[in-house]
Length: 143
Image (cartoon, rainbow, N blue to C red; front, side, top):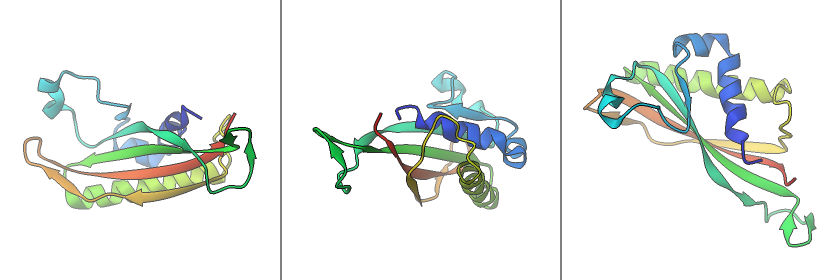
């Protein structure tokens, strides 16, 4: 599904603790401000992006030229004031997304499986802030 990222946004918004910690600052794709104002976006915040999809070639189920499943890649970038706050928000985001899908709250999204990985922790001295990405590989039916 080419809008898999919207379900991750919904998962984060559905978690009152996480949504409160980021003061509702969750953005799909990018923070909608001019580049010169980017350093003034209040911390912490989350950006969720859709980074594309590939067909699942590891499955023997295939109809015609394409497999029956897609692997959608989405990225959840978490930005915080301190390293400690970042670690807590990353854990909260993982927990919120896992809970959202386990409880079947992703109406309209049939998730067959997913994996998650975390990128390195970076620091932006100009803002200043710490940030890290969670990358989700979400397998959905090809429909």
